[in-house]
Amino acid sequence: MNQILLTLGALTLGGSAAILLLAWMGSSTRGRYGAKWRCWAWLLLCLRLAVPLPLIFRGEARAPIHVDVPNPPAVTQPAAGSNAPHAPDSPGAEDTPSPSGPQGGALSPVNPGTSAAPPQSEKTRPFNLPLTLLAVWLTGAAVMLVWNIIAHIRFLSYLHRWSAPVNDWDAVAAFNHLGDQLELHRRPRLLVCQGLKVPMLAGALRPAILFPQGKITGEELAFSLLHELTHFRRGDIWLKTLAMWVNVLYWFNPLMWYMLRLVERDTELACDEDALRRLSPQDYSGYGQTILAAVARLQNRKENTHEE
Image 1 (tube, helix red, strand yellow):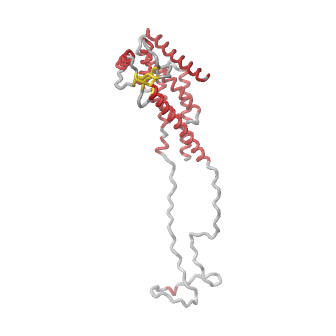
Image 2 (image 1 turned 30 degrees about the vertical axis):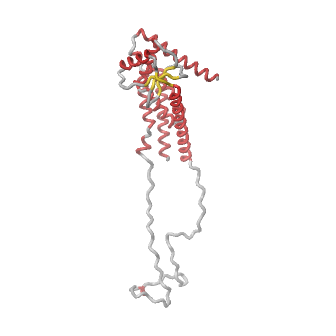
């Protein structure tokens, strides 16, 4: 139990130091160490924190095994002067002196395994701090895990009810063309969903690119598809899922919540870096305007939600 708490403490302290270092690198050395390398660092950090290796390969020391060997029963002899006959098959029994007390009386057999003291009532167990801390950690992790699972199930239910395949042939043709350029042998589904403000990639096991209702054409369609397909090609959704699992385990550390925001920021920046490498310099302005317009729509939606 103490080993579990010590392992969690060591991992959360080391992870906190790594988070602060990567946050500093993202703000002061952005030109030299791009978002792509920070994403690799986030991946390695999350893998280290997600599987506490000492909990698997090094358990607590086992308590020694005690084996109780029963003592042989005590042999009592008759007192001196007794008329009790001796057993004929016990040679030499008459030569064995009988134990006697100070007054010459016979001693009663005493079992060395028993205590003459009267039984005492069981004392109240003291407060076990390690056990309490372990129970609090497990309860918080279970609550976080259940909350994330419920939120994911609700999102899947929303998609099942309000999404439909895209029937715009221009969008489908642009999707297939970009998929061929990115050499994607496996591609996400292309759906349109009510209530969305911007295109997005969702789903780890069954990924799908979701478009809001309304016809999206021209550069906005091409740049939006390029952005989301680049996310899919990079596997950013798996990194975000892994970071969320780490946050479930270390929910008590505020820096783990901050890490989720940093991972979200760096995956978006790394995706933009990869997308711009596939565009000509003349398209940089159009791509940037498309991304900024999507961010503005998301911010307006959040503000309207808070006002309501």
